[in-house]
Image 1 (cartoon, rainbow, N blue to C red):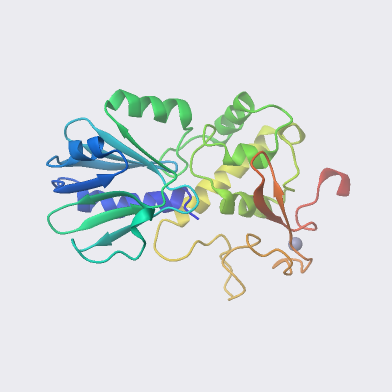
Image 2 (cartoon, protein in one colour; image 1 turned 45 degrees about the horizontal axis):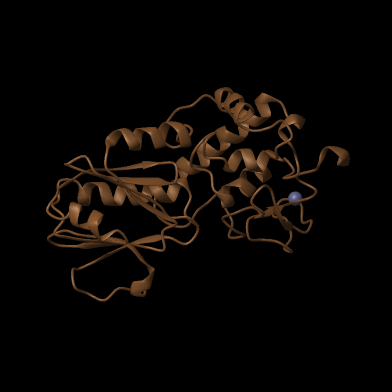
Length: 267
Ligand SMILES: [Zn+2]
């Protein structure tokens, strides 16, 4: 599942390969917008939270958000794709390669840099990988944006507070911090809330290299994640059965250990 670390890894792959290249062919839903990219040079590729911005020399920017199922592929021009054509969201062809994005949740062509800046500033909090935001600042930001009785899991996923945390990290952060996913913002103080974002930033940054996502850095083969996707299996710390359920504003799959992550009433 693409989260902030995935988007930064994609950015780190695409930026040096696309920047300075002239686009010889482009395909996206909006054919007029696609034509406007042909013959133009890519200036830069920027990641911000879960959004990727491909900037062109004439001021146009393509914004993409992969959602849960999106991915980027690279092919020699003219070669067969590994996914059906109906799943195409965007393709940009240079002299030597075709860069194809499939199943994106959002693709948008922004005509003015000011529009991009507005999206970044109004819809996205500090990027946990790029920006060194103070944990207490993020805690206060969460309280400004969300209601007091909002769940902590919703604050972690809210990209207006801080950008980069996705559904896998959400469960993993709470396990590491020993906090139940049923906890509301008004049940924790700023220090605890800020620490969750600090842990998130650390995990996202540690996962910028290649390979699978790791939140559990133990020297064994028991698993690279503590709880995500492990419902019904024994907790890797205490052996209790990991619970799972659809929690929060968007009913996203959530995993937790009832013993390592007690609710207040369990204390
Ligand atoms: Zn446990």
